[in-house]
Every structure is written in C-alpha cells, then in structure tokens.
Amino acid sequence: MFVLFIVLNGTDYLEDILARFVDIGVRGATILESQGMASAILESQNRGIPLFGLFESLLDDSRPYNKTIFTVLESEELLNKAVTAVYDVMKDVPQVGAGFMFSFPITNIYKMGKN
Image (cartoon, rainbow, N blue to C red; front, top):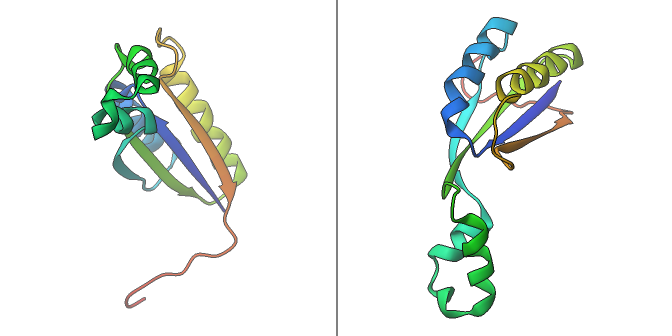
C-alpha cells in the first residue's frame, strides 16, 4: 500500500483530478485546505522585516491557499496510474509551481470503530 500526497496550488484543477481518480479506480481521497509557509509569513505580523518583502514579491501572482489531497492506494500499479492521471490533467498548466506530489509506502493501517 502507498499514500500519495498532492499539494495543488492550481486549485482550478481539483475537480478534474478527482474525476480522473474515479476513472482509474481510486476509491477515496481526503482534501485539506492548506497554506504554504511563505504565504503564512506574509500574513503574520512580521511584514516589516525586509526578508519578507522578498517572499511577497515572489507570491504576487499566486494564490495564498492551496489544496492538499491525499489518498491511500492498494498497489504500486494504482499509484503509478494516479500519478499519471495528475500529470495528464496538469500537463498544459502554464504557471510554474502549480503544485507537487510525493508518495511513500504504508506499513500499517489501523481501522477505528466497529468493523
């Protein structure tokens, strides 16, 4: 089993990614509202510090919030299909930094509640 995390800055593509997941057999995913570090720093009280002006200039055209999607996948084959599906949706996105993905193996899953 594997978990795939997708940090999606280009949130307009969320529905397309989820639709592709359904098409390839992904049975579920969790979507979290998230925020990058630079965006959080800009919102903090430290705006007067010169270093943060650099962050602000880097983020002028970006969105302050993003979506983090994670899904548990039963096989490496399904993981590869999911990664390919995301790449297919995002292949023509013109903006740099539209998001990133990472995965890692899961050693145990602990169900809660009545089985």
